[in-house]
Length: 359
Image (cartoon, rainbow, N blue to C red; front, side):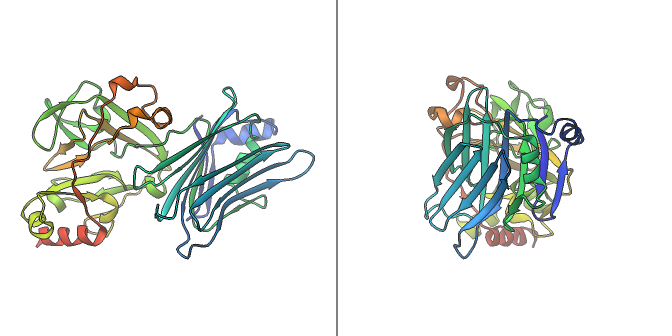
């Protein structure tokens, strides 16, 4: 079933799959033995404590779920059904400054486990906690979270809440829309057509093998919103659609003049300004793709280059690897990546570069 419910905190809009409505009508006590709650939120700029999500059902059988963020950088989860209580605290630390957090709460009753993950979408920063899980949440309770009507309170800073029947992966995520054209040894191929073993052209001009292709379908909200980066900015000869956190590798005399470097990276999120890029209208869910290469090379698209999946030393971390999209790949088949040391431009720097190149 995968994604079955969604709350858009900005539009105050809720969605349930039709088959879920049927299950709620015919089996009101149905449980969800395996699943995830994915929440994205902005953090309070005035460092106040936030109750991001709160659900409480009373009666003879009780259930509660509370997710809080504290000014000291902690994220606190309390989840209970009858007498079974889960209490987990993740210490982000004050130095881990961010505007946005993604929190993933997952469970699998067959394995008796749960997982609490706090991540910063704009970075590789991720904290994972495991806990014992002995009681499956009711489907009706989970749907009440996505349809706040008295039992649930959601902080205004929450961007979205999504519910899934899968253990949702965390860590490095794909960021290319299916239609992005990638240069290969056989010519241009769309990202959706690329497979393990294909040979693509890196930004340096070298041909490199594709070790793996990762894909994920996600809500088209918050950090997952697609962005259309428009030609002719940054050398593009055609528009490309990517996620907010995809980064373009840009070079040229303007780069050297403004930043004293041969190459810089530009996050697509910095280009959502109305002329170099804009948020792309999308269906409720979008599928992204990304390439895993032996080294952390950027890959060529027509007259530009895009960053590929970065793993760092993730293969040495069993917990992070096991929670990722690459969990089923043996560790000895995964590369270790080193950053190329490119400067990542901030929004005003990206705008200055776009204006300089357009002049």
